[in-house]
Amino acid sequence: MSSPSSPHVPTGAPIVEVRGLSFRRGGKAIFDEVDLDIPRGKVTAIMGPSGTGKTTLLKLIGGQLRPDAGVVRVDGLDVHAIPRDRLFELRKRVGMLFQSGALLTDLTVFENVAFPLREHTRLDEALIRTLVLSKLEAVGLRGARHLYPRELSGGMARRAALARAIALDPMMVLYDEPFSGQDPITMGILVRLIRRLNDALGLTSIVVSHDVPETCSIADQVYVLAGGKVVGRGAPAELQASESPWVRQFIGGLPDGPVPFHHPAVPYLDDLLAGPPR
Amino acid sequence: MTGSLAALGRWAIGVFGRLGRGHLFLLQVLGASATLLPRFGLVVAQIWSVGVLSLLIIIVAGTFVGMVLGLQGYNTLVDFGAEESLGVAVAKSLTRELGPVIAALLFAGRAGSALTAEIGLMKATEQLEGMEMMAVDPLRRVVAPRFLAGLIAMPLLAAIFTAIGVLGGYFVGVGLLGVDDGAFWSQMQAKVELMDDVVNGVVVKSLVFGWVVTWIAVFEGYDCVPTSEGVGKATTRTVVHSSLAVLGLDFVLTALMFNQ
Image 1 (cartoon, helix red, strand yellow):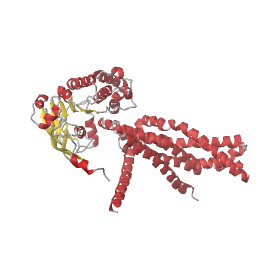
Image 2 (tube, rainbow over the protein chains, first blue to last red):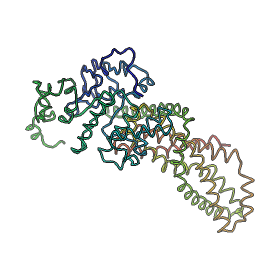
Image 3 (cartoon, each protein chain N blue to C red):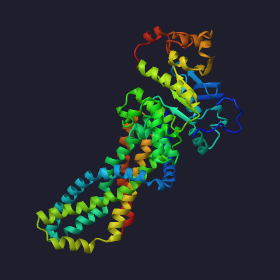
Image 4 (cartoon, each protein chain N blue to C red):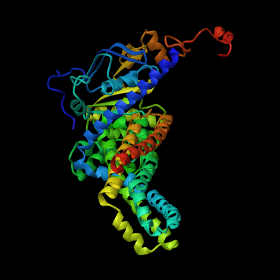
């Protein structure tokens, strides 16, 4: 189902271009004039402390959220300017793995993976079965196809959701915190799966995560976001050597730095002396 | 004073904003429903869920309501020597009012709350968002089949409730209290009108109630705050708002249809 990039997109151009992106929520600037390029065929990690808008960025790329300013182009298409039917056409070529998996709870694993195929194609059941089994084999869950999401562990649910995300052979997969809350074995499985699927299927992968070692082990390029800006960019090794205090704090896991340990507050002594509110 | 006015203004904006969203949502659902004919299986599956699974409560409640009508009707009519009109009294009460109204209230409690909770939980667990990212419109795939199913199931449930209620009244009146069997049925046959009682009473009223209850239920689910507390509150709102809407609309419809 994957199709070549739009005819007007030059070969080698980034699959995702973000220019001057600004987004505010509840009066707080989540992004302030952010520029990003996601190269084709690579694994790009978007990292940063919690609350910096990593998931929001994925939603802006997927067209689920609308920016206050700036442009997000996916495969040459401005996702916030195209009509809804074209956005849906684009989304057929983009898979997304949600943090929760977002599997449909009333369907089995098999039915979940078959869901996009049944919705968007007129393939016969025999071919759908073959395709679904091949996707499930790729994530190691062919034997779990009869299980319902409630019967899966967290790691299995994410693998099933990954099989569903690649069901339509997308050009790009967006991963929202794929490793969070996973045990080391499951994390290792997911890390290898993301890299292997990216290379074997010729995908582009965007991995949003704050698990530094795991993400850096598979990423070709890393963006570090903090304070509404891109504070670091480069290959994982380049970031390790970065002089930026933001990047050093994040990569080194330091408790205090540009991202303060304390949430903004009045001085502690003033708070103690103020007494209980009347 | 200024604070109170501001609070009142915020409340009014919230209420009217929600009403506006609800009506826009209904238009979108109707648009999505129009595309469902080739995939009517989705609607049939939901008719099972909201209709067939509500049958037990409808049958049990219909039986008891009919039995109570039979008993109360007999006690009143016997004083005037008119107990042979029990069949008419039971049938008219059920077709014009109690059948559609009580069936709709039960439908709101059983199926409406389930619809809200189901859609709300799908929202809270990112299933609706996941569908959107798979280029599947949740309004077309999730909401519209449920809306149509409620619209179809409600008149059927009201008809079943009414029929079972008549049997309940018959059981008490004829079976237990000794009303003449022939008089019970013949008077009912003579006095119950197809258009006035059955079509206006059961069919039109229950279609309107089915429309309103299902609309409220799917909107509350789709519009809820996607947390466990938000889903709980939305479910409560569905039952409260749709029950009040049914009772209020029943008065309006009765005034329009049966006012002489």
